[in-house]
Length: 100
Image 1 (tube, rainbow, N blue to C red):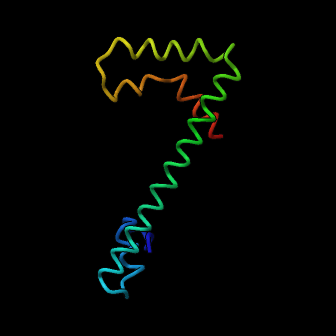
Image 2 (cartoon, rainbow, N blue to C red):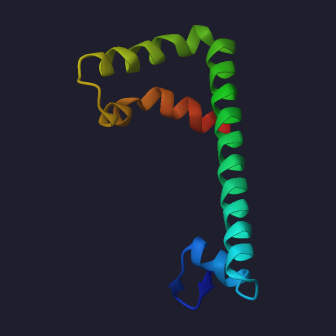
């Protein structure tokens, strides 16, 4: 199990434990399928969230466009780096509102 008292165990170990009674080849196959399905589901949710975010920005262009452009301009002055994403406050708010 994933939770045992206060110990948190990783999901991959839990999957291997779930299929422990199977031969190695079958166990690895089943674990791989579970991991693949999890990643596929995660990506599907990501695409839906991003689509709703864009729809909300377009539906509320009069109130959203200025904030989006401000975030984009703030990131333009820096090197291409993941840390730029930390400064996208308005877009982050729109994403959270879309997911709510």
